[in-house]
Image (cartoon, rainbow, N blue to C red; front, top):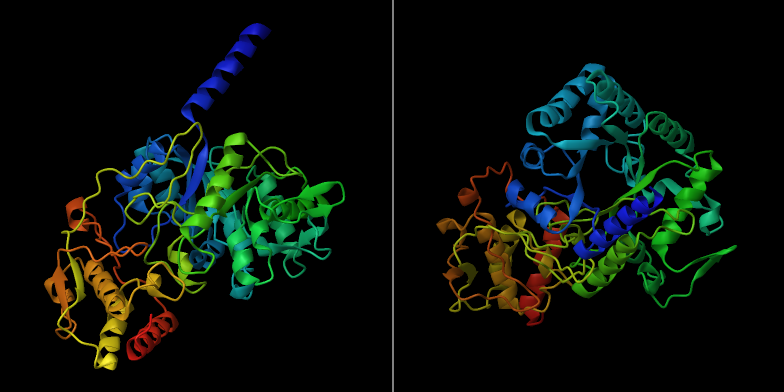
Length: 487
């Protein structure tokens, strides 16, 4: 019997090695003007070995497409719904029936976790959700039990790493923030008592982006950074150090065995000096190598589930934290590959299949138009960027190398594509024209959008959530560029 068991274990191990990495998890964001069809995304997930996915909201199309896919689902509840769910058990029961029970019973969607809010205790929220998160968690848990799903579907609260800190500057000094410590302990105890997990989001990129003195190498794996020595433990990267600071906080408060998953971790590819293809590939390949090896951290040797952020770029995402927010995907908006990644045993990424595009044409600045009136042109550019994603022409971004004329063309084209290539979407006071010659200038890509009509999708909002500040920055940058002949 022992010999058979050993043979079986060896067989499973070899099978896993031959197939490459298994057990990948990722975030599937839906803030896009022209989203990939859900069935194509599910195929993309399966083709690349993802068997767990996190949704930030209960999107009907995504949840239906995930039915009987073999992919386990964490479905999120947005922060703006917490008050309603906290204030009424009936609202929580209705939410569970509509967004959990319905998809499990009708479509066979394998929902395993419900995420209550998303980083609700961020400092920037100024206690906006401190009174509603725990009651919402309690009501959703009760509703799952009432629906007969309490054993199958568990709860969690995705938290930003700013919920804990260390006064010593070392992971061993970890504890929860004093202002939310009591609340955190109540939430953790409730989750533990009900068999749930704690979810933490760790972003080495943001550590680097926020602090000019942060040692860049320490943000990556397999680096040349000076290690951090914490007693008998040596930390060679911020990912391990950050995670173990949380583990120290849990141990210090009597929750040393609390299950933890990493809900978000990744690296963006644009719109910041450190956000580029090379850095993203370096970080994410290092992350994947750890997952493939089954590597944990010094304080937690067993590897946690790690949800890579993110699967696909989102051109309609808020840029309040920074323009890089729209560029976290390991795939472009259309499921094409941004950069190669090794998924184990030489297995490479596979791009999305069956994507249908708008016509192969672009809206550009007319060659006959001069730049003698930069103000008029800047107004047209500002108009375009009010309704389209112009983040990639910001300073230090992938399209910042364009000359003033191509800057204008990029803005015009993004508007034209966002508006489904409507004839009136390439007018701009007779400053623009449609061309069939691709104006892309690597690394700057002039996009052609997904044809939503061919995929028979309805999109509720095609206007990107660009803030006025970012639009003003783009406009001023372009005016200066045009006036001075620089880019």
